[in-house]
Image (tube, rainbow, N blue to C red; front, side, top):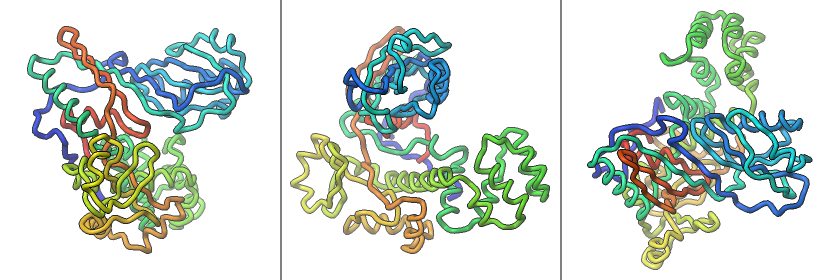
Length: 404
């Protein structure tokens, strides 16, 4: 896997709308939809905060510092776009509500403060509501945008993983593949490569590594890149011990890289099955949206009512050591992807070391709460998506840009 394939589009018959997303933070607003409401009593104070142009982790650090609490004790349900105006919930223990509401910070304000019994954790959200301003649309562009959104609302949004998951030039997915294939030298050498778009210092560090100047490469490589820094530190001590260098990398980072590879394989499957994302066939694996349960379809005809009501959808593979298998044609599709990647049962079993047993993911997600509002040459679009999905993949259908 040298890169990601071109992404096909469910709305390919509609011409691309020229333009781009987010010319300024106010063009992109996100409201977190909580999984549950704080009850008004408990050790943890739930803060609804509004932030502008800053990442979630920076918001957490600023709040913790202002309220004199360790950042590690704070909780949050999801990461929100830094280049946007976002409203989300952050929990912090042992803080008075009045004190939190009085906090004044640049680009960050506290809207609500309500006690609750437990710390917020990743995934404790129902979804997100987006309000997007598309600027300078022509008379022809606006109807096309509406048409794309109406098709997605009717058929579902293709549940591709966003390209941000894969890194520049799909680097994360490439590294994950080498990790699974058990090639530590190839993995380390790919890790320490620098593309043409890399900052000059990283390019200089990568050149030093290629020249065998390991100590120089270690000093030049930014410490913020923990994977490369740890690997270089290990190679300085034990040159050519590639396995030791790989083991020196924090396990959490290795798991993330492997997960990126899994995501890339799912995207490949969805690209093949895109036109059937709102259909079921006998032998398919179906996803039950209310609880994420999966089952093998024995009668596609009997599932049509639930399929049209968006209660169920076809599910694709997150390849791993164990997964529910489809039957017939769809099993052959999955096996062909694995064969193209050179993955056999032994390689899949090796994925257990990274904690992945394999799973299923719906091929489509519902797009709800769709509203349009025209303001001069601008079009405001509002919609809701469930957690774990990417608004960028919605707009990929509008602009016809992106990779699978």
